[in-house]
Image (cartoon, rainbow, N blue to C red):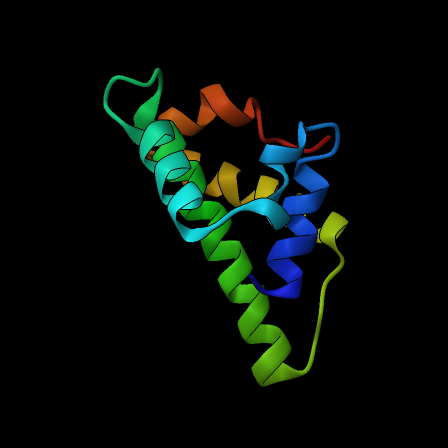
Length: 107
């Protein structure tokens, strides 16, 4: 796990029981978690799949910016950017995201 994704994961898991801490995950745990979240029997599975893709895409872009451009963004700015990007994805038709991220407009 990269330092960036580890930091984001740890930020998201504050208050979680130890088994849910990303530092304790193995590849099988992540696969099981992903499949459980995105199965068709899970409420809002399409929205959950879209949100996971959006998060992975955000981490991937940040990784590329760090490697190829020598720039970095704070976790707080990444979360803000993720929220803004979710708004764009919803405007483009990702209806399932609205339930998960709410109104994405910034006032």
